[in-house]
Length: 167
Image 1 (tube, one colour):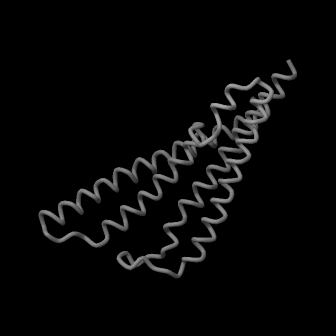
Image 2 (image 1 turned 60 degrees about the horizontal axis):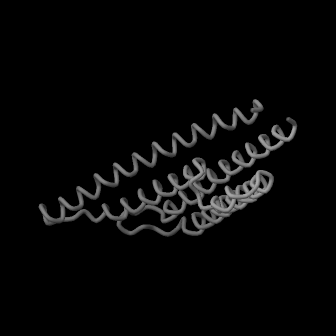
Image 3 (image 1 turned 45 degrees about the vertical axis):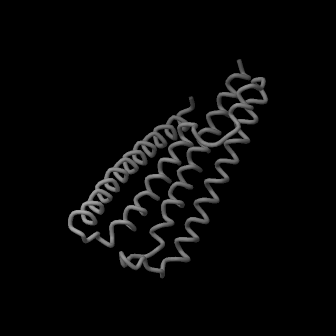
């Protein structure tokens, strides 16, 4: 594997590890918030107003980041059953097309997530008093990660294809 691709692989492994840690922390924190909400509602008879919107925001973050990691791991939507049952040369081309389409999806997610965040920056979440744009940042972040991971997969496919053809 070329040195540049190895550097990219190290970067994507770190990004993946960070995204998974943030996702796991978000899931744990959201679970604790929901427990507090249930305790407040049924024991204290006073459910905190902030708990549900915060739990939903956390859910957005950990789901979007975990979905991006799914692209890194190869769990994303794709036509793998068709690709895997084809001869080797079409498999490579279809894999590259698939990676390009997933990368395009990630780029669009990033661009439109940023646009939504920019559009809603002046809108507030009433119970929290913070900008509504915070709900759209995970789309942009996940889109960027999906784009990076798709580029890495594409480069790996390209380098293995040229290496195999040279032999």
